[in-house]
Length: 236
Image 1 (cartoon, rainbow, N blue to C red):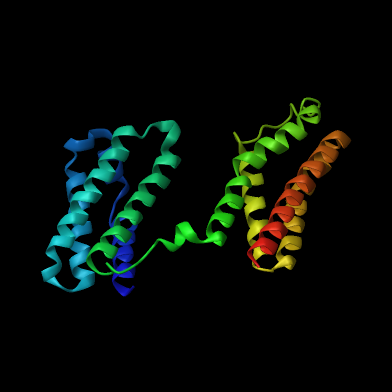
Image 2: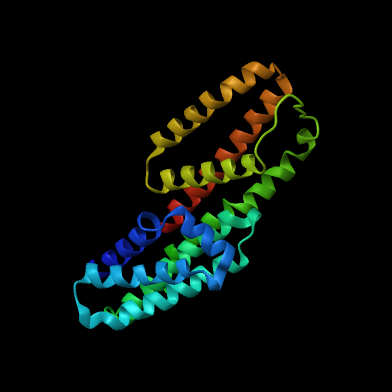
């Protein structure tokens, strides 16, 4: 496990500490012809050798250099102004996944992941997490659709899809708090959201908006609580 930790540390150091902003811009503009792309991947390979402290693992450094190069090239090629966040997250997931795979192949070949497919708890939590993201957002938007049309606030604008992502995050937090038996944190989260919303509601002086937000919040929390209780009882 210490080797995997060092591989991840090398990645974090290379991607966030030793990569200037102008390198990122150069890669985005020039793509495969960017010298910074090659230098960046080379640094990752060198960091692996330095942190592992074993020159006999040169082949691992070469593999990480090649894999990191192609993942970054993929990101630079298909990333656009409107999808930078998605590609940043995808890029980091691919890098970390490649490190885990290399670690398993060269250092932990006996690791057995078949338990994932046979574990009731694993699939239960995955299904619950998925339901609490997009499906529950769609469900709540349908339930609230009649009132949504009546809520119009011409005086202020909100970030695109901000409400959707706030709802997803709060449901996931509530779910995690419940399955880990931290009910007090659910109350804290509800209180924190109420405090942040208080200013908006006070300024708007709109009873319909207040009722709409209250209904939406209670429904969102309610769905997460029910799912958390069901999952906890099934997994027990």
